[in-house]
Image (cartoon, rainbow, N blue to C red; front, side):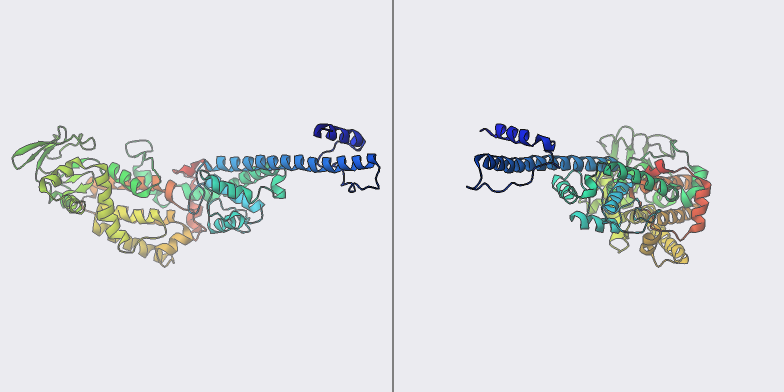
Length: 470
C-alpha cells in the first residue's frame, strides 16, 4: 500500500474522532505482535506511522510559524530603529524604547528606572546592555549582521509569550505608552536650555545665521565641517589684531588663484572656499595681508604644515591658499584637539564635551584654557567633582551648554566683541543646535529641578532631532 493510501486509510478509520491535527493525533498503538489479527496489526502499523508523520508535519509547520513570528518581531524593531544599530550611548529614542519593552516583556530587563519605573528609559543604558547579553550574549543589535540577528532570534523564538499571536501588538502598544510618558523629560533635553537668552538675541532658524549642518556621526569629520563653515574663506581684517600681526606676506588673488611669490606669479587652483573672499583693506579680491584661511591663521598653518611634511616655503604658501578639506581637518586634530585635549588627559566620557573644549582651543589657546577653568569652577559650585562627575549625573547636554555659555561670556568680554561678538556667538549656537541632536546622551536624573521647571514652563521649541517628541 502506498504512503498516501496508507494515510488516507488511517484517516478514514479515525475520522469519527475528528480532524487529526496537532491536538487530535492518535495515541501510539501497541507494537504489532503475532498474537494480533492481521486487521489489528494493520491498524496498529497505520496508526503509529500516521502519528509519527502527523507530528513531523506539525513540527515543520510550527518551525515555519516560529520563523514568521521572529521575522515579524525583528521587522517591527528594525522599523522603530530606522534600520540603525542599537547599542550603548547611541541616541535612538524609538529603537531603544522598542528594544527595552521587548526585553522587559521577556523578563530580562528588571530595572525600576524610567518615567514609568519599569526599566524603560528610552535610551540604551548599562542595564539594557546587561539584559541583552543575558538574553542572547550580544551587546548591541546590528540589523546588518545576519549572524548576530540569528543569535538574537534563536534566543527567544520558541518562548511561549512570543508565540502568542497578540505579542507584537501588545509590545507596540507599550512602546507608545513609554514614549508618551517620556515626553516631559525629553522636552527638557531638546530645548535651548541655558543658552536660550543668546538664541533670542541673535538666532534666526533657516536664516544666514543657521549653518544647516548635516552631520555624519563621525565627530572629527563633523568638527571639520563645523569649523569650515564657521570660519569662512580668507580674512585680512586688521581689527582682528592677533592674526593680523603676522599675516602671510605673499600677494594672492582669491578670484583668479594667482599667487605672487619672490617676484614670480604662480597659478594655483581657484579654491571654491576662498574665491568670494573680499579684502577689508582694499575691498578687492587681492591682498598681501591675508592672515586667515578657512579659520586657520598663517603661523598655525606653518606649524601644522611641518607636521604634515610640507616644508618647502613656496609649498607652504601654496597650500595655505589651496587649503584642502583634509588639511583643514588635520589642523584641527593635530594642532588643537590632540595636543590641548587628548594628549593632556582632558578627554571625558563624552565626545561632545571633548570637542566642545576643542572649539575653545580653536579660538585661541588662552581662550580654551579659560573656558575649561571657568566651566569646572561653575560645576564645582553646583556640587560636582569634575566634568565626568557632572556628565554622568546630569548628562552632557547641560555640561556642554555651560561650557558654551562660558565661551560666549569670554568672547563678549574681549575688546573687539563689538565687531565679532555676534558672529562668535552664532558659531557656538550652531555647535549646540546640531551636535546635541547627534552626540548628546540623555541625563540619567536631574539635580536642577528649578531649571528644569523653568524650561518646561517656557515650552521652548526643540531644535534637535528629538523635536518630534516635544
